[in-house]
Length: 64
Image (cartoon, rainbow, N blue to C red; front, top):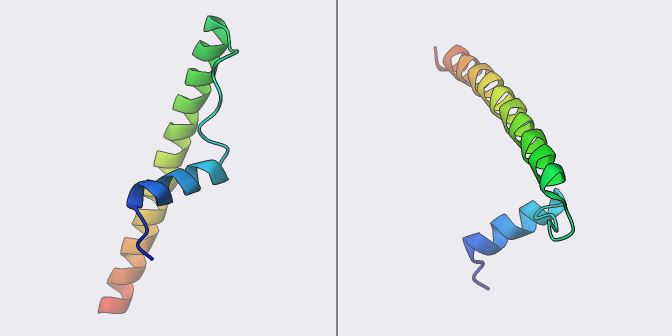
């Protein structure tokens, strides 16, 4: 069975409750939701950079 990469991304997004139904949200609620998502993206990027730094340090340690 061949699995489409888009299907994997969609399945992973659903695991996190995405995409969210935006149909009934007001303009103010949509702005607040976007702000919250932007903050969450910033948090994820910080966590990724931290973990990638730790991983690079560990790889350098075991490479020597």
